Image (cartoon, rainbow, N blue to C red):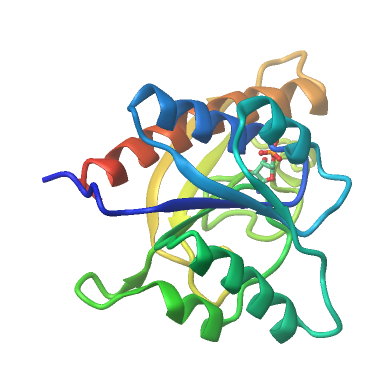
Length: 196
Ligand code: GRF
């Protein structure tokens, strides 16, 4: 079964390499992302969207979280979006926001995130840096459903990589990021086909 009626969007706050991988992955499947929303007017993702010809809305944090989420929701509704992909989005979404993406049948929100660690290890910020500084022999990335907690939702897929003897933090993180692009695109393809 495919899910042709689904409409996808990305929320991103930074560089946007995962957003780019998702957008290119979708194009390769004759699918598309309706838009990208960023809360950061200096985010690299804005330029990437221009090059990829995808609409990018900059919605900066307003006076309150509630007002900001309302503005984000308005933009998503105008594009009829029912699936969200978080890609380096630096805000925690409230439960009342997530409820707009409720999937009753599957008891989840149709909101997914990519996280730079093998969850449940290293939730929160700087997953690769903390794993590297702890000297652990392998790390990885996780794609998970988003719930109201911080990186606590149900894990969908994970991918591992080894720490190499001469790795510095930059090399270690770059290996992880490259892995993320493939992992996130694979998960997108499965969602597109209705397999998740
Ligand atoms: C990635 O490592 C992602 O897992 C984390 O933030 C980083 C975003 O990178 N949540 P990019 O903006 O997609 O290049």
